[in-house]
Amino acid sequence: VQLQASGGGLVQAGGSLRLSCAASRRSSSSYNMGWFRQAPGKEREFVAAISWGGRSTYYADSVKGRFTISRDNVENTVYLQMNSLEPEDTAVYYCAASYRSGLSIREYDYNYWGQGTLVTVSS
Image 1 (cartoon, rainbow, N blue to C red):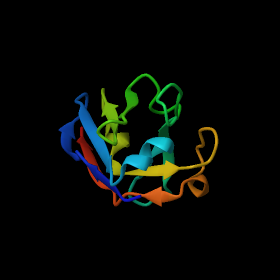
Image 2: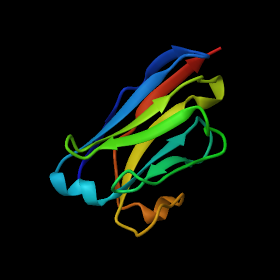
Image 3: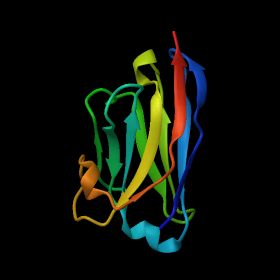
């Protein structure tokens, strides 16, 4: 499975962005999907995850209530809607696919990774 993340850019604090992660093949709908991010000088951290059918989601506390993860298995695409963005959300955002049963916040549970898309939030 190849993943292509897009949608990053420069936005002012309080603004919104929607990230997309397109998967290369139809079987990607059987994977749980996650978003991670890595800020400058920091380790990569979990942001959100969604089950293969889209019924279960999980969020990091830092984004809960502001970010929404969703997926369209017909289009083989996962989305991350980011609202009320803060300068602390500035990072490279990565999407990842996991065939592990159950949602995970751990990087090593994810088998495929996209290349990342940069989100910059100005104050």
